[in-house]
Image (cartoon, rainbow over all chains, first blue to last red; front, side, top):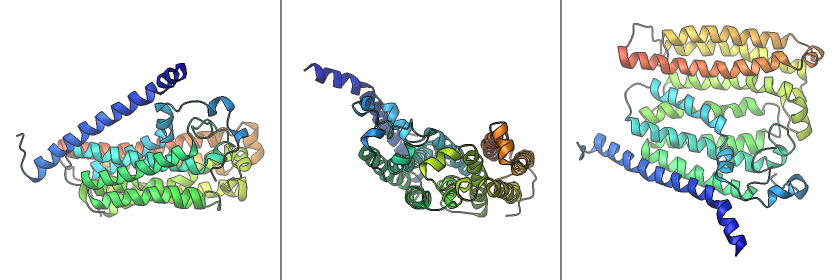
Length: 46
Length: 320
């Protein structure tokens, strides 16, 4: 079981990095959607 | 090509867990920064305006596409990377990332970046990005790099595409101005890499990579550096008279070309013995000058575009 803990510790930085990347991707897709809607179909937020 | 013997991978490294930073290194971040910068220049020089969020997302896609081709390059070249001093600390030869992981990462990122660029910008820019990844990973890395001393001459096209992709992402089309910017990087690549190859000749020879100094010898490489520098100078000045250029670009291009020609001339006049005596000082200097050269040229493109955007178009002859 100790080896599992060690494995989790070693993978922590990679998992946190991946989390940040995925959250960034969600935010980017959201803002791109808003920008595209603004330029092509009227801006529902404005 | 990626079969690395167990002896080439340190035993400690083989049992190590790849960290997030190792995957970042797989993307060749330094090359990626140059790609982003030249693509940004192509984008801001293009007529019309792009929504800042769309521009940022497009640049991110182009950066990821460039990174993906870097990962595919490291997967294929893991065996020769392990042989060369300059590349042996890369994640695959170091044993931090398995070749299969690098391949999967590169392929996955290629597909995602191309599809995202098609959605965020337009199909033309996405198609150009896909072709660039293919050209770098397959045409250059798998085919040319190990088979001909013209490897970086033809392969240089892959590095020259980003300003065209940036322009296409902004406008949906291609004009003479981004094609000239393409030619600038294309003609800049041989003297840039051959300056490096001259002082890393032993590395390339040991790895069996047929770089120009290994195959044609130092004297021929030095002559060709000078020839390419001569060819590059007028091509690098020409964008000043396109919609991508302006007075700042002209002034910067003239000064940068004088410095580059002087460096190339100095390298072309040297003998092997003279270079050995001062540890390839002139060649290292030319390599450094070439990096600054490309950076200032594209920074000038951005500066002229910024002036046009803030002060309005200045009276300047635009020929094409």
